[in-house]
Length: 225
Image (cartoon, rainbow, N blue to C red; front, side, top):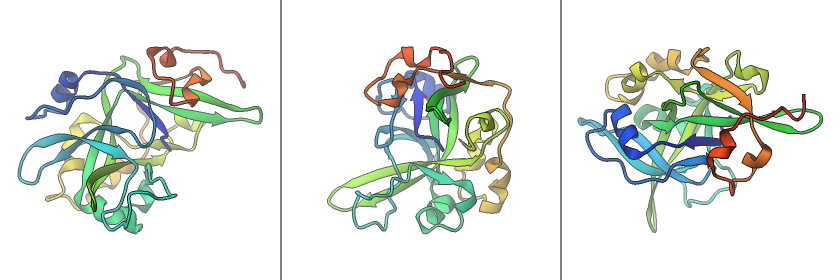
């Protein structure tokens, strides 16, 4: 799964990386983004270019009666996108990219949980595959979920799942809903070994979303190995 991630770049870098034709809404860099946050999301305007909007992390289906639920749909398993009513329509019509510079995962041991940071060796920007939804009631809310798959060899050493990470060459395939069927996207949902990623232990301060600073990315000793 993916329960925290990092986006520590400025809007201009994001706009350049994703070839946006319009400016991205202002956002503050964060080293510890928790569920429920509003973050930049890249989506495709029908018949137009890519757009960037701030969306709520935690998918709220458009047919939901309320925006509050005991089920926080922050992640969507790739294996269930076609079957689960909460994801099925969004998988067909509303796919998106979640900009990030890395994410955290926790390795559970008999003695405790050790957090790890997973990100690019060059601290580069990349993207998770996501789905987005709109909800209209007493107000309007756009929300998203991060698609996850079976962990690749590196991440499997600490956890069984990982976010689906898309190569820039595949961004448009994922976003384009008019000329792509779901079956044509199966290869993007498989785990891939990425030699540009690195994984290392970090301080347990990341456990609390109140902590949000560059110090969280510093390599630390693994406390439980």
